[in-house]
Length: 179
Ligand code: 5GP
Image (cartoon, rainbow, N blue to C red; front, top):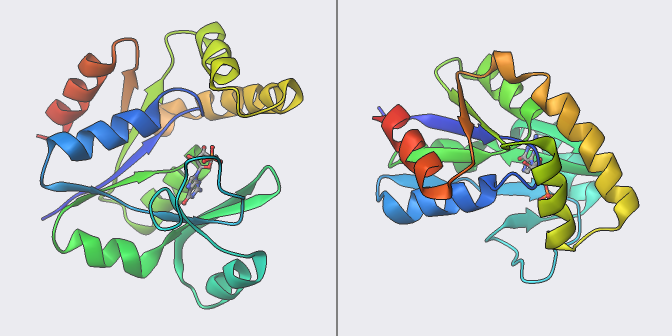
């Protein structure tokens, strides 16, 4: 049976890169695409990084029980479209790149889901990565740092913890877990 794999971890930890590389290297894996009400960042495409939808559409989808889980952060909604994931699971291992609250909700709904948390080598390191990414103001970065500490406090509820010190090693570690 194909697995549902949740990859979480503080933003800036490199989980997006890890998820992308995993599906590039493994034909039997695919990435779920979440819905969000936030605006696309430069270079992001609708239907590729996210389905970018309005708040009204999002709320309708909640009412219709269309999400496996959803959560709100930074005044925007993010959710995993249920039908989309179940459809993809028929063919491949599906990777969800979502936040910790979402991951724990998925586990409640689907206890067979495997939860993997990517950890930064240090908190300092992650702050530097966020600043380098240069998509946000310092004030927002501070808010993200608080969120990061919250996410890290939930790590014991995850099935596996993988430190992203060396990208290739982190990817190999996840591939071994999935084997
Ligand atoms: P960003 O705005 O940087 O793309 O994502 C912000 C946060 O939302 C990240 O922690 C990301 O993992 C999380 N996120 C993305 N998609 C989903 C989703 O479908 N559900 C939940 N709960 N969180 C998500």
